[in-house]
Length: 269
Image 1: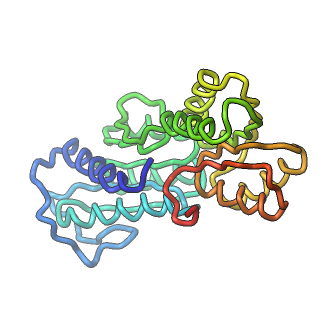
Image 2: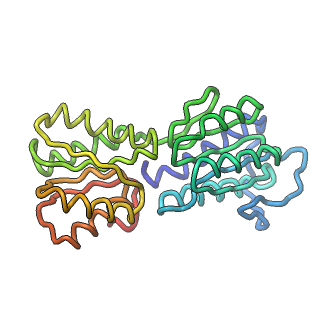
Image 3: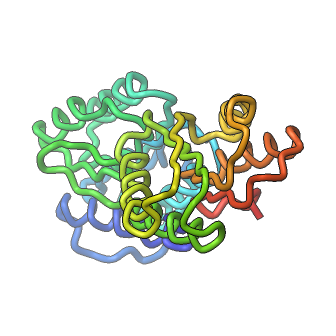
């Protein structure tokens, strides 16, 4: 998903929530300087809608940008909404925060998990009458709204780019992130299916990692010690790629021609 699309997606999510809760008027653009991460503390008039935002703890710039634009947009809605933003590091913690938001009386919730395991609690929230917008990773529950970029196309474009740079044969390391669920599945699917079509003789070697530069560095350093010749690396995220590039540099490897990424991270430039 490109950063320039982020603001539009966040706006779409929050306006969808207002519509689902019955809010028909547009925001007057006023902001309330008393807004804070734990809500705007405005006391809750009858016309206000309570929106909860569940986001992961910041592991890199793209996640930080999502949370930032979500809060900026909800502030722009001014007195139309009361809100809370909660951050978590795993499904168990986010589930607890979802329960807290329901106890608080949230009319709607934007859920942005970066891992699997939120299906049951989100389904319970929907069944209890809360409108839920699922951002990015697919949550397989009935009645959820979903806003996301085209993860599969990221894989398709990555495959085309690598073949353009190294040709139809070579050794390509694929760094998947199983803990990210549908994000990794779709990006890997698009890549592998496209490679099978346009470069069937390509040798793909798949390893698991995470969406952080620390994991990219550690995991790819291990890979470099066990694989003598690598022509390209299909990495799903810029933060992982930054770690990969550091590992290549520290190992003094000159065989790797291409490292892909994704997310528009400033540190990748």
